[in-house]
Length: 116
Image 1 (cartoon, rainbow, N blue to C red):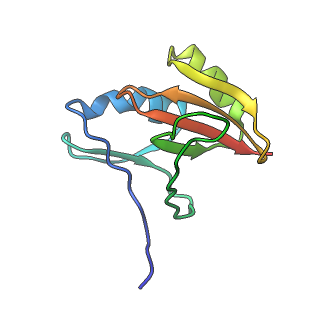
Image 2 (image 1 turned 120 degrees about the horizontal axis):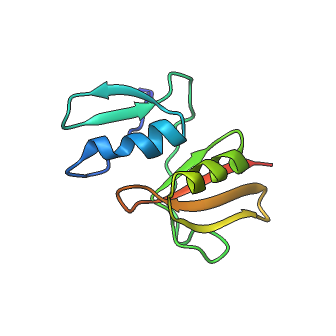
Image 3 (image 1 turned 90 degrees about the vertical axis):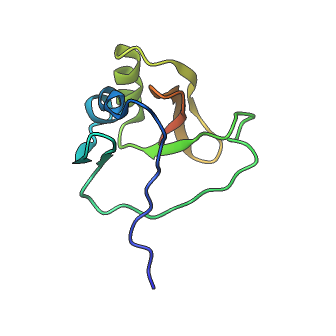
């Protein structure tokens, strides 16, 4: 057996609120929309990973999601321009990533990062 996909499910009474953060700002595609559930993603092959942590590193809380992007500075500027609350960074971490924390429309703490 091989795991083909892992999906993060975020409970909300208003799935459409995800569009600005995940589609407009981060550029993910709307892959499925049944009204009660909307799934955003990319058709590009991605790595399957689950992380279990006691902290988020550098004394930060464990984020709900981590999203790797190709340009963390652009992602940061787009999040600020869209009015999302930045909670940490951007900062270059000693383990080789540049990242920032931001709250999505549902209050989830999202770690946006790029490897150096």
